[in-house]
Length: 191
Ligand code: SF4
Ligand code: SF4
Image 1 (tube, protein in one colour):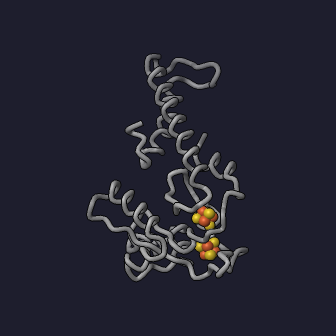
Image 2 (cartoon, helix red, strand yellow):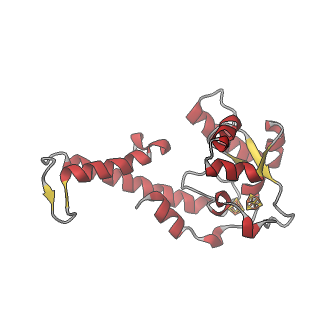
Image 3 (cartoon, helix red, strand yellow):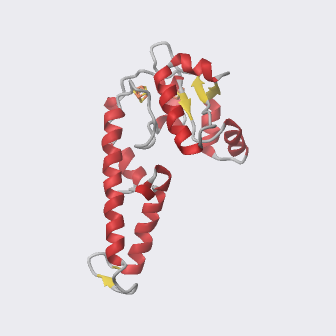
């Protein structure tokens, strides 16, 4: 269950209520300045994001669009980055008045991928919230199970051959540990 493959394959498109909130009030895990640097360095996701999204002039301006969502995002970001952190919010000019996309056929990958992970903070009215919660629980269980398997494998010599997997205990530990580590940013150290 590698997150991206599984997540995107199973994501039910019909859950989108077309509220338009992910187009009108987006945020990123990094600052605007860092986004600009990443775009200059050629990072496609940053280039895509900045090609459609504009930064709200102020926090207050974003707050007026959806106070609850801005509060939720701010609370979560502060938990991760510290009390002084104030997230930046963005809007897209291509969203139509009926919340459809004005450049649907040409919309960048960043739009096609939203919501891009079970940990993405969506607006309270987003139709994906319950499903995302279920996905978070599934992924957490998967990581917890992997941790248990790694603990068991560590009792074996590294060159012990695990027939059912066609790999040695050492190879499996390395493989599983990489997966576990990929969830660190979501707090997997505490699961
Ligand atoms: S916030 Fe959720 S329900 Fe609203 S448009 Fe975006 S994906 Fe769809
Ligand atoms: S390009 Fe379209 S889908 Fe992407 S944020 Fe703008 S309106 Fe939404």
